[in-house]
Structure formats: C-alpha cells, structure tokens
Image (cartoon, rainbow, N blue to C red):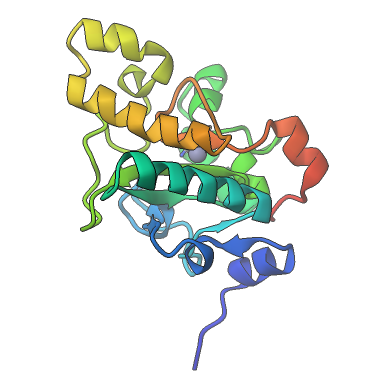
Length: 207
Ligand SMILES: C[C@@H](N)C(=O)N[C@H](C)C(=O)O
Ligand SMILES: [Zn+2]
C-alpha cells in the first residue's frame, strides 16, 4: 500500500509539480528530511520529494538544458525546494540566538514568508553522475561569509576560497541564471525564480 504524505498531497492540490517526474536527470536529497542539516533534526518527515510551481520547474528545465550543453556529466542536486510555512518556523526558531537582522540573511522571516514557501526558490548544488557534490568551498547552510556570493571575489583574492570552488559556484550560478533564476547575496546554493512581491501575487503559500 502506497503511503500518503499530507504535505505532498497539499502541494499537488495547489498545482505544484514533483521535479523528478519532469526532470529525471535532476538529483534530489532533501536535507531537512534527514538529520544532516543545521538543526540536526528531521523536520520534513514524510516530505521527501522536491516540488515546485510549474513555471519555476520550466525555468529549471531551461537551466538544466544549459548545464547539459556547457557541462555534460554534471547534474543539479536539489537540497530543498517548496517548503511549507510551518517548517519555515522550525528553521527560523532554531536560529533564535542570532540577532534578527543577521538571522533573516540566512533564513527568511516566516512572518513575511520565504520564496520557498511559494514553491519558487531552490537550494541546490552540482554533482557528478554518482551524486557526489562538487566542492563549493562550504557545505550547504554554512551561515557565514565564506558562503556569500557577494564576497567571492575578495575571498578568492585572499585565498580563503579556492579557485576550484569559485569556478564550481560560477558553473552553478551561470546555469541557474540561464534559466532566469536570481542568486542572493548570502548563500551560494539559494536561487529565487521570482521576487517575493511577484511570488505573493502569483501563488498561494504552501502551509
Ligand atoms: C535556510 C536556507 N536554506 C534558505 O533557504 N534561506 C533563505 C534565505 C530562505 O529561507 O528563504
Ligand atoms: Zn533556500
């Protein structure tokens, strides 16, 4: 008997689509459905598949085509996609010791919503055919300067970020930009398909 996950059922009802049904070459390892994350807790439970809004998935398809053309052999490896708002609170509350301004650089304030809550942001890296992630200079959800795209040039110049990691980040970013995604300043792995304002207008929050 197939088990049903209410979070995934709700996402489907809201029109979101499972990424691997459309793009089977994309790898998915949802980190918040494991204990290998900054909370050291599985907060997703039965939510183990990556879902996105249809339009966002089409953009990922475009990025995927670009990646295949420019770097055959590399794959996207998704760490997070649509994120229920209730889970956003779990992430946010875990960083309660951080000053508010700093905290919202790393986890969007659930009171104003993350673009993940609209199924239109993706956390991802690049991996080889065996799902081994490329060196990006930090692990996923490393909340510090070494992960900041806005500081990459400086980090490269002062030797804190290796040339290899720098180039790997560019490969990821160029592919995502080719799909129309926007990077953010503080996390090399996070990409938005739309601004928060546009996402709010177009979509309903995944509760
Ligand atoms: C928590 C991290 N993976 C992430 O996605 N951060 C952004 C800012 C968000 O919560 O929207
Ligand atoms: Zn993210």
